[in-house]
Amino acid sequence: ASDVYKRQLVTGAGGPAGVAVIRSLLRRSDLTVFAADMDGWASGIYLVPPGQRRLVPPGRDDDFVPAIARMVADDGLDLVISTVDVELIALAGRRDELAPAVLAAPSEDTLNTALDKLALAERCASTGRVPRTVLAGRDAEAVEWEFPVFAKPRQGAGSRGVRLVPDRAALEALPTDEGLIVQDFLPGEEYSVDVITDATGAVVAAVPRTRARVDSLSLIHISEPTRLLSI
Image 1: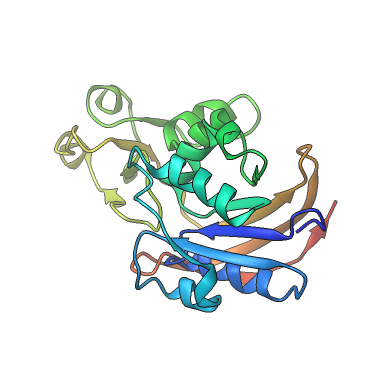
Image 2 (image 1 turned 120 degrees about the vertical axis):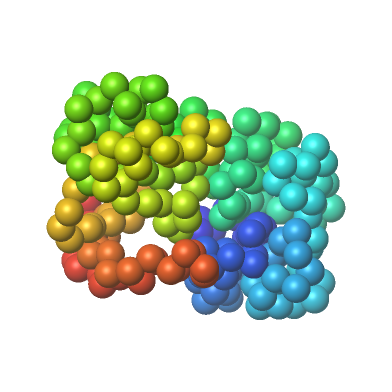
């Protein structure tokens, strides 16, 4: 948190990411942290004083971005941090409306790619090794797969909706109206890498982790940090 951004709003205060961000910011005594969520019972809201708790419309609501803009004006906010995918996309496309506050988020194009597993696989194909990734249905059925293969929602998180497809009959039975993608199944230990960059896109630090388990109910990734890499 830069010294310039003294008054900060964190949305998605009901999720584990929102709670983690709020707790981290509260370690700084020089910051004023506001917490917002669409649910008045969201746990993260109650980490901040009553005068800094805010309710917002759902991220898909037409009034969501205007509501955040009004908070920026009314509360004199310097920085907006959203921890909800759908909110990030809405805000990134209209960040100018939040001025003079800064939105701590990548560009709209980056978000649309990163949050779409098919688009991300296609974007990364020329820069590294990626599993074959195609839409369920006709595209997937045209591929000579080595079974089992993996199917998952094109958009989503927390391992919701993922399934192992054991054979071609199961592949052909996959629903085509759920936005599923099909990928090569890659067995073995899974790694995640959390990366933080500065405003110019330069990598500040990277934390590789082995992912031991994903809890889809709480959306908490339970994993073992390996080593902090400072760039």
